[in-house]
Image: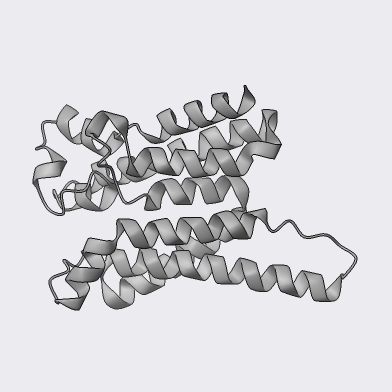
Amino acid sequence: MEYILVIFFSYLSGSIPFGLILTKSFGGKDLRKIGSGNIGATNVLRTGNKYLALITLIMDSLKGYIPVMICQKYFPELIQISALFVFLGHIFPVWLNFLGGKGVATYLGVLFAISLSSSFVFIFTWIIIALIFKYSSVSSIFSTLTVLVVNIVRSNVVASIKPDQVFNNDINFILFIFFILIIFTHKNNISNLKNKNEKKIKI
């Protein structure tokens, strides 16, 4: 029963399309018909409304953070399940024919819940890469990879220093799954980068 409850709650929380709701509520166009067609904060930013993009970023992050934190309190053994399904809810929302966002902001919210230090690694890396290349997709993919690598290295360092300490590798596994999913959601961006058609962001 706990599995069903966690999966259901996490998926529904993740599936709320805040970007689409906010832009329509403030008289904007349908996000799916402008820019990249994505419902996330980056595409909201392309509408020219920076404040609405920031609110979308925060809300999409919170819908990743809150369910996982609730699960951590009541069903800590199912935290990876919650993290995965809140992410799947965002990229495959039932309300939008399973065509959602790329999941980066929701991923960040999950990181804040399961590994605070990893969330700062992600933010720092994302900003640096964005300032250099001006591509949100490149920043997102590289930052997600960096978080995965840093956690794998850290777990191995801990294992070598304290061989008697059992390190929980579940977080590395879920971070690997997230990285694969981020690659999947950015497949069109990767194609655009190869064809030099990817749109840059203004920072």
